[in-house]
Length: 177
Image (cartoon, rainbow, N blue to C red):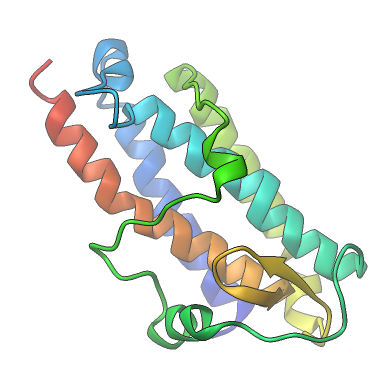
């Protein structure tokens, strides 16, 4: 799949997130069904934060050839995710302990409208560089193994798309508020 095709998928996924923002009341957006379940705001925070500070940041690191190496492979889980073009739909993933300990606080609906615009703008700026990258420089993904710039870029789309299932579940819970 070309980088342009990946970016088009990123646009579609984030269009879903953006359009949904107009359908939530502030109360629904902040609603938590229980302590173990995120609110929609927390889920948006996670998706936006990881898009910028993890997926796009590692895409950039690979392109700049820093904090990684010229070798390494995906692990078996990473191979499967890329083979099937996404994370298994009903599979729940645990964040690494160091990340999971950081509390996630959601922000306003308007904040995420701006965040989504920034993510799309940043991703678009990488299109040409990722397309022409040789793919030899890689950085470590905690669950998938060593990924190159294009794989990180593709992971942004797959991760964001995976959370659409969670978004639907949270929307159903919040619809009763």
